[in-house]
Image (cartoon, rainbow, N blue to C red):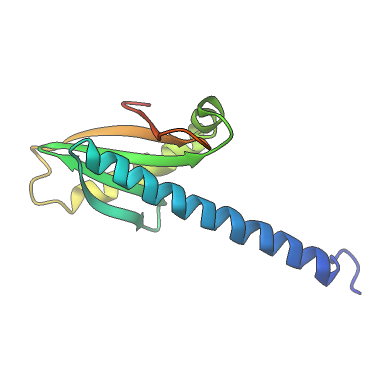
Length: 130
């Protein structure tokens, strides 16, 4: 084994954890999208990726566009706290990139929201989170 490398079984464990977390995140995003639809939003983009970052959900209701970060955690407070300053900046830059490509950008009101996914609870939508 090379110096500083981890055993194959440990790498596989980390990979398995990442895959499980990613699967949970995708389920959370799907649940959040349905909850937003039930509130009258139209999902414009899901997992919108740019070089600047990724936006989980872009939802629209009229001229209001909600840039939504979805976090699945044990509590809503943990989910909200997981969206730190660095994450907010990354999402804000990606949202700016998306906005410049919209033909009606001058009419759009942009808002940044969080949807907290907590086991056994309906998704909690925090509007205007930052």
